[in-house]
Image 1 (cartoon, rainbow, N blue to C red):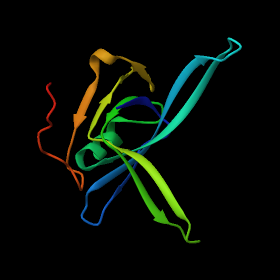
Image 2: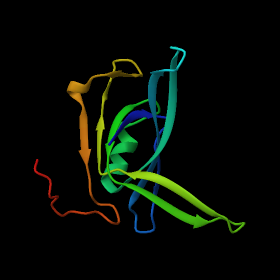
Image 3: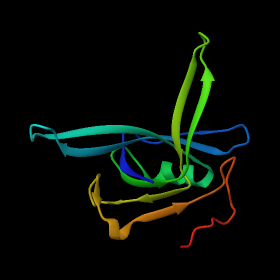
Length: 136
């Protein structure tokens, strides 16, 4: 689960089988006091990938700066680059998305958790449609 702001508009492309794939960059912030009592803030960037209808909904509903909640498993992929070096990428495979902003009468978003949009789609290439053994 992650709550953060998009660093750019979702990048959507389609696979050969015409399945939508959205790549998004989400920033999370942490504020803390250092050993000198000074307030510090750090930003961490996370890669989020959505598939199918969820990807298309992300493209329609989200834009740079949107406050959004994503839920899904974390996956690390590896490959060899052109020079033969092993590269790694860790990403969140979104299965659920909730827009935590609502459209303002102007051109921007304003926070409004009580009117959040929720979108859930499990049509990715390895979607698990089975029941979880969770007690809730």
